[in-house]
Length: 319
Image 1 (cartoon, rainbow, N blue to C red):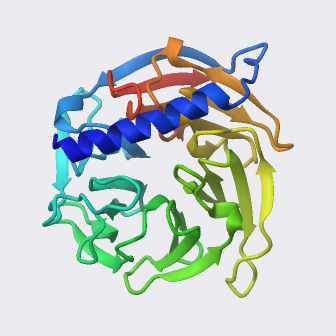
Image 2 (image 1 turned 30 degrees about the vertical axis):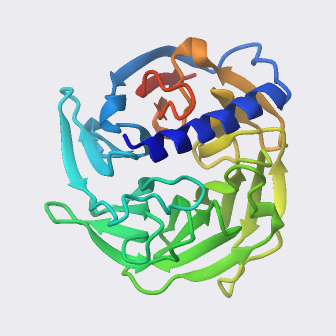
């Protein structure tokens, strides 16, 4: 690790520590919705194996973006870890990546045909953007994004074949065609803006709307998709979630499991905006970054951005 990268990571750690100290704590649920919580996998921090996002394969396999290693990997049910792709390093080493100072992989989505789509942030115009990896193929960038952008959460509207991405630096949600091509600034506003740390971060497309978290504001925002495809009026759906990262909906409901990176917690967010803490560092969390759900099984990657100890994958059963 270069000194510059180490310094930037310390900055991230300090930001998360500030959030942890200043944000109000919320009491745990009286009846914890999770059982059988365990650490399923440990990763190599020195090798940059810090899982930032997750997608689920049929038959039990798991795909992860190992952010700093710039790798997309598959964890097989037998415990084998397979590297599917390693992204090229930027010529400057990533030192000009906005807000971070190092290149990294962020959002990850699997399409029904097995194609993986993911975001790469480098601070350079030749590499930053949306990438595609077809089964058995090689990674290719299909949509460029600005060098000063930090595309983070990624969601697919399968009904229209369009991706949406939350930009943590530019207060923007980008819209991008699944087949590749130019990105459109679909929604912008102060609700997405950064304030001292990352702004818009996690993103999901759900029930005719784009849902986005704002890490520094601790909010969850719903942006309706109008009939003409344009962005509707922003709605603040939850507050008090300082340090929130990505999330997932429970089934077709508006109930959410959220990774609260800055607080080292996992929260259950109710449709009315209230939330309760369900998991903490005592359960093995180390700055959780994202959530995936398969049936009653919940998968929680931890990138240990601030704690710098044990990047891991936690598996829990949802009651």
